[in-house]
Length: 143
Image (cartoon, rainbow, N blue to C red; front, side):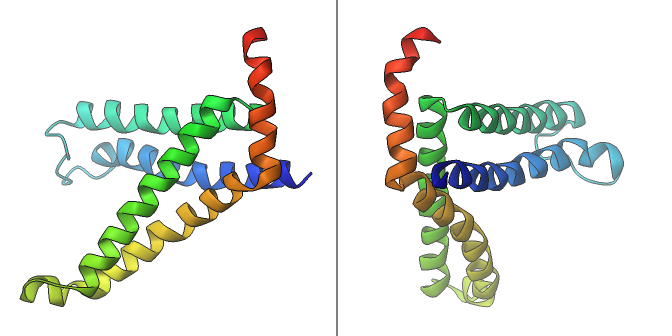
């Protein structure tokens, strides 16, 4: 039961980046003065939409108990946690006046990145959750 609750919490956390990607996908079409990130509204829509769909796909497979989805989610969480720690360290040790003036923003962004990544890493690493995915390895050949 604990494993199902933990996976549910991680899946809810995983919906947040998907929602942000979908928001960025439709952003250039809603706000006509917005400058597209990749130089074209179409490119932005396709790339951010595909990233959002990928997040949803991985979340669905994680809930279904696929081992590769567990590894992918754990790896992505570790990468985001590392990015948050890097931004936090850079904010605490600014190199110039601009970095010093923006250190509060950097600390805020790092906390926003580190909090869900830490929760996801801890929940995915719990022994009942990890065992549930490791024991399903033998079921991979049937899928």
